[in-house]
Image (cartoon, each protein chain N blue to C red):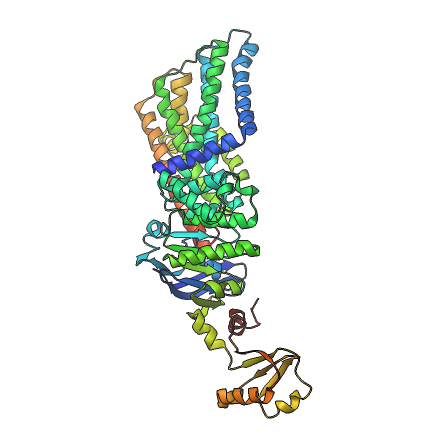
Length: 257
Length: 310
């Protein structure tokens, strides 16, 4: 597994270093977006920047872009490999293909968090602002990312069969937006609780909201629902990806684009 | 080494199910090159991809050293290397060395060993000086050599080559051929598909010709060529035949095929007829006298026929 991790890490770093303009431009974009969050809040409210609300906005946005990246990265990876003609070589290596694409997704997130972290640190230093957040929020953030990988595997499975999934990803992102603004997990009734286990992120978003924005202590039931949601989506994503892999091999379409 | 057993595959199309491969079986021993030949659409690529585990057969299995691809997929594919046709096999934006190290790591080759192997392989194909060039800057021939190196990073005992010399110039083809020959001599079992029958004839210890998803001919290359050779003797003169040629060859089963060539079908009289004809042709100077030896192109055309032949 270490070799797989190192190989994918090197491949990602090479990509970043080989195309420095692209890397710098994407880091600059991140900087501008976060600067907009930091300074925009101050401009709109005509008050000094900072405080819990800014922290919530910044962390919420960070979680959102990481979630989107984790959901889409594997599908893009499958689509690019198919387009470049290397997918069949990837599917021939003696690793389960789920592992290969999951490791790539992990590396992509690490590669994304490095510039995000650097930009945030730079802005904090420039604005002398402190972000307030509870370390306990790290657990649901990791749960959100792992759930996003589950969903990403599902979309990647679709990409194995259909190859082009750009529009599918947009629909998924739209649905995620709907899920995030809908307080499914805190609605009364068993049906909503069951739905919050089955609908990706539903429980975790409520958990995060409670920890970051409302300053509340989430219930044990919400934690349990979040864990069950993570397991349900991740296991479901793995099972669907494996199923799609088998179907693609049965139909002989791995090498198609 | 590798045994392909009764592979069968059909695909669903809009017009119904089409049988692409129908019960294909063959073996390739260590140190042997098997040329898997056939016209377009005969089922070669489907077979090689089923052998590589990229297409799941409806029926049949592939065994490497007795272990089944169906039940031990990772173990079996770890012992295979492949250069697939129409596929780029490599990341064009990575350098040659980065590609080899990446694919080596993906096949569980430790870092230091991977570097050593990459250097050795690149030296062997005269590309050591291009190690730090991105693949997209290389010629097609060089890319194909790197693709072959990529497939060899984990020193697989089984090598699958689907049209490895397609579109390559003479020099690159010779280089790939030399490498395949060396690999076979060192014990690698090579399954090769190609439309370039001269290359197949040069490299292959055995040939299998497939048509409509079935193996229609299989055997040692030399034996197959002998089997399809006709009992013809070609006589080539050193200068154009004399004007009285008709008189000299009268009574012999001879066809004049050119101003300085003729063919004798000795028939039941065998060598006696040949010697008698040679005596009649004297003192006209002859360049050479040779028995007809079929080449793989003739065998292929005869076996595949014109119906679906290329």
